[in-house]
Image 1 (tube, one colour):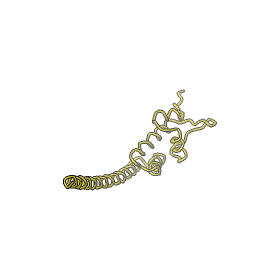
Image 2 (cartoon, rainbow, N blue to C red):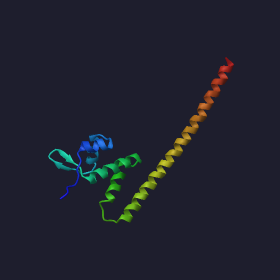
Image 3 (cartoon, one colour):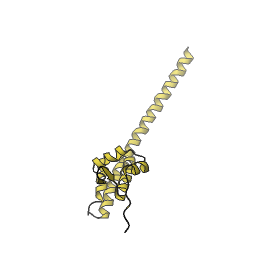
Image 4 (cartoon, rainbow, N blue to C red):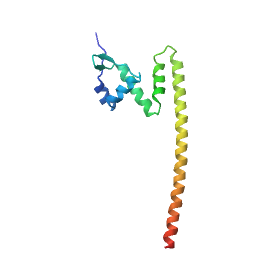
Length: 130
């Protein structure tokens, strides 16, 4: 009989370059549910995959609440097509927010370029007047 591979908190911490505190935080938020042997946490491959998805979701800018909703989709019986549709909706929503943010950044950078140009012109004028 083959037993399922398990991981310690330090295994996952090293593998994903996150602190044990961060992993415990995700546990407190019910994003992962390790087994326990006394005080020792034992993580299954499912917990490992969920942690990987949590970290990917964070990199993509999803909130922990959104990540939990996405992860919880896979624990329901609503069917894979519906799960994928909901995930696509979340991705599209996040993409729109990021694109709006990019437009705001581009506008701010353009305004900064304009202000910088004006300041340099003023300095040149003042240098010529001295």
